[in-house]
Length: 343
Image (tube, rainbow, N blue to C red; front, side, top):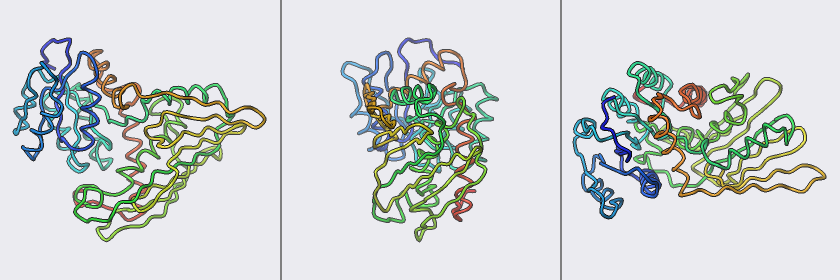
């Protein structure tokens, strides 16, 4: 990779939407890194985004209407992709072909076939690639992992989680449009599945495969999933139940049940700062781990650390984990009868 040497790591953003504002907020508060340029289909929106996150006394954040111009800039050290799901693969592919390390919003790609192609390209070109599944990197889960490793709840037997909120059906919305890879599984159920994998894995990317997957769902008129309830069964009688929905509400917690206790990760579990360990006959233990900024700082720092170390994947969120996760989603979508026009 031909990148100008610098101690101040420069980022480009493709897709200056709502989630990119969260990313830019974290980036602006971190030392030795900055936003260099922004690319979006709507030039006015991209310009407003650049102005919003312009640091005082810093070089102007550039707005590139041409993606090739952005990718040809030798001073861009990495790219954050935050476009709608269906365009992730195309954007990531162009970044990798240009030799630019990529942090791509979840899902890395909406199908396993696309994700495999991107991982293969990353490995062929020796360019870093990571899915931006920020939850796995949150400080709170370091403490939860310690409880699990120490056997604080004994043997893990079952998991329960929910991620539900109500939003009106709008067929043109990215949440419901199959051409944009809409649906609850890819947008929010991915967190239920990702943290199921995180709890059960022996090390990142090594989660056992389910022995059975059961699911039921409600599809909207556009053909994508509005609500999904699933039960995954694993070797040894371990199970994971979850519900994700755009048409209702839930407590949005993650509960890990063990042979001698329970860990409850408080809502919202995907951005949690509090967890409680409960065991019969013992006082509850509460763990607090606040975000230093807004939680996105962990994935930003992970990419910068890995790129500077010459890695092409993160040991904390390796390519195998990303592929395993989207494979589960593919299976569940197929059972629900949800397909996308670009498959």
